[in-house]
Image (tube, rainbow, N blue to C red; front, side):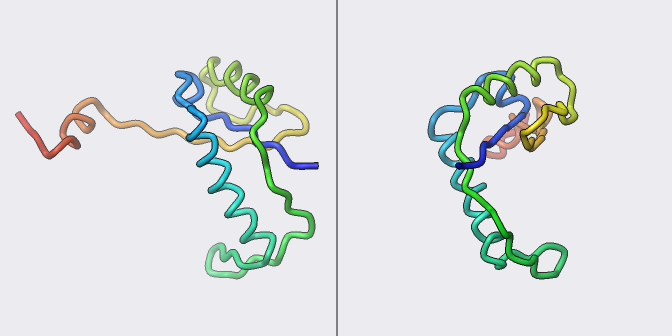
Length: 108
């Protein structure tokens, strides 16, 4: 049985930004990292991590996506404590000025 990915990203899930390509990319990167860990080829804090005994690939779950959507709309940035799922929390933002100035270096 494949593991399941439960993502609680804000604002991506709150605003419904995930297209299929986004989902595919997230799974690819996550599963590549998991594969490195499973093979004992991952280094954390300068030390090689022992291989995982039962590291499985993850797949996208529409039902967990819906659950994450509902939880993220509460704007509580902490784990939901939902039994049986893992969660990755991520938040990023910039000011409107940063966004404008980042486009071609235009100012004023």
